[in-house]
Image (tube, rainbow, N blue to C red; front, side, top):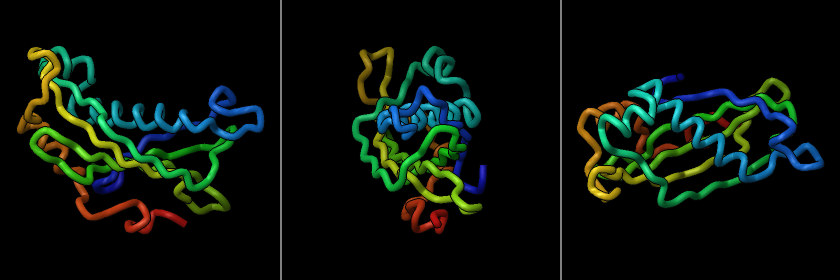
Length: 154
């Protein structure tokens, strides 16, 4: 973790690549999900526990991803995230996937994901994010930033 940016590491294994050793595009979505779940676990509680106790979950309703460079077999990646917006029932989550090239960290993809909070006891209906979670998420909110604006790219 660095400031308001949460990060996890991911190594690229052969199973994540095509026959040329380049990461298949949909694998990035798996890594973004992994980073989101790790964030919740470290900052609050495991997702299954949150769903059982708080009776809420967060469902992605929109996703926009930009691929800037390829990840390849055996790359060591960093997946970073922060919140662009924390509203009453909606989150805008920004992810960046980075790799090191010649000693410099470069951005290889960036994603903006919109998530809504659902009440599982009321048939998965849209609900307000609990105040204690809003407080946690607000600590990771960088409203007017992108990874490129934060000068994290090469």
